[in-house]
Image 1 (tube, helix red, strand yellow):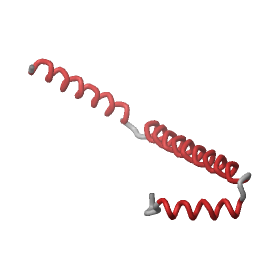
Image 2: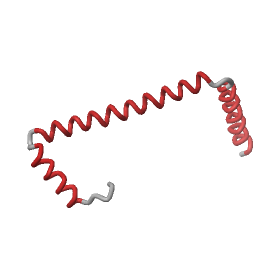
Image 3: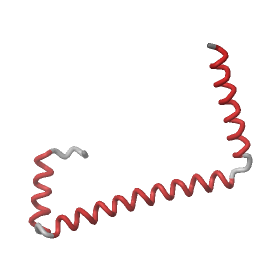
Image 4: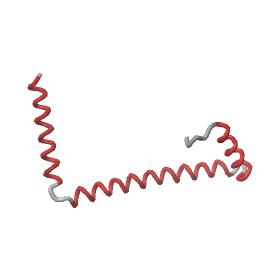
Length: 83
């Protein structure tokens, strides 16, 4: 974890406790957790949107996918017949 050991984390947490106080730390932790969750969700949305945009705008992509599926079926058939 970025080269931080237990002693360093204890020092950082104790300084945070002194600066923010005991009542604010749980609120800060909850806010940080929500921010991280929102960030991950946003990344997934952007990634999915990018995949959708590529699949819709590339000519011949559906045909290539169908051809790939056909090749995979032939490979599977060859494995079955080869046994």
